Length: 104
Image 1 (cartoon, rainbow, N blue to C red):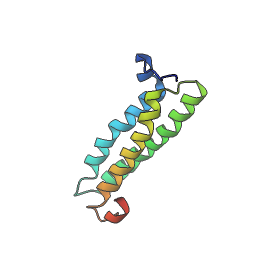
Image 2 (image 1 turned 90 degrees about the vertical axis):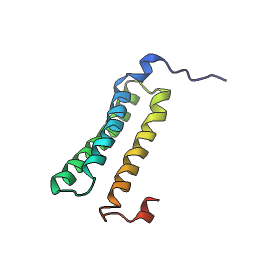
Image 3 (image 1 turned 120 degrees about the horizontal axis):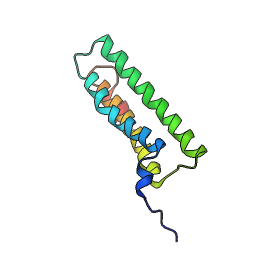
Image 4 (image 1 turned 90 degrees about the horizontal axis):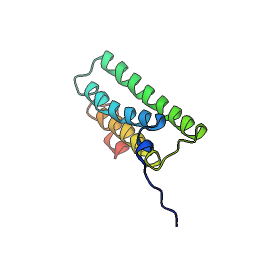
């Protein structure tokens, strides 16, 4: 049975860097959605969420086209997606924009 080994260069290829950027955008989005929230905060949070979703699409294309699919990328990409969506849903509960039962 072959084992997937994680090498140092696997951590810092472009698709993985885009995934790391998506993860680091989550706290910024959370801060923007802490009540009281202005329309500017909503717009910025939406923009960050949109850009994060776009990087998810782009990193997948780059990884497949340039043969940069890595074991760490296979782990981190879906984790980043789940963290992003969960953070948005949870932060929308106190703003009365999302029902808790939908989130949990």
